[in-house]
Length: 307
Ligand code: GRG
Image (cartoon, rainbow, N blue to C red; front, top):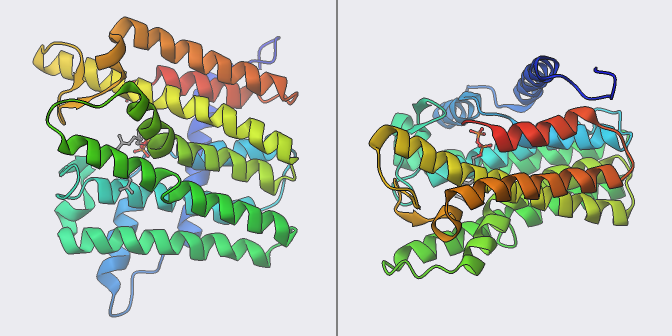
């Protein structure tokens, strides 16, 4: 730690790497054994989860849990569950009926390896396994009411009032070729499609640690800001990486020809928006009155990431 309690960059990166390894170990405890008549689906599920990724959502969940004083293993089933849900969403998003992507996280997508039907089923299976896994927390040493509240948040934010709802509006808006999407609609899509799982990650950490309702709703708002900044940064990366490769004009998600924040605001404004929104989230985090140097560094890292 430096004198003012902040982590320097290399300390942060080292700690982040350790946390990713820890999450991978937690996930392994809950992944299925590859055996039986349906062995192929277990392989496809494990392939998707083990393909890697930043493990952002479980890290945020555990860090928030610790920030509010949580210290038991009850968080682990929920950490695994949120990553399973995130992974299922990516597997389904990559399917031919959606984004039709052949590569993700530098590897072949699940349907590209196992076929389209198995891609659909692996996503379905991961979603169900996520709830089966989270339910294991009911057998652990923590009040059932906390686990039930966390469970409800997980289900709501992943479903039609959260991530699935955002994806629905996104898919619908792509049907119209007149680029008529409004900024308001884009806000809705981002808040639900990207923000909802990030919100649930932090909220579940807070709930399981025994935070008050007021604290949980403040955490929800902080996470919503982080989710928005994270998604806008994703738009920036789409544009800047596309520009680098193709030398094309700025303004849209070239691969999908979709409107993004950059379309509405221009690249410079969007870059400063990411900074501003993330700073607001960090200030609100400070206002909660807990000191978590890693969490603040994580916010910074996520908005300055390059992939
Ligand atoms: C199919 C129900 C359903 C939903 C799909 C998550 C999603 C919704 C679509 C993926 C496409 C996308 C770009 C979504 C925005 C959120 C986002 C940036 C996802 C990628 O999350 P990361 O960067 O991925 O955390 P890794 O690979 O690091 O885990």
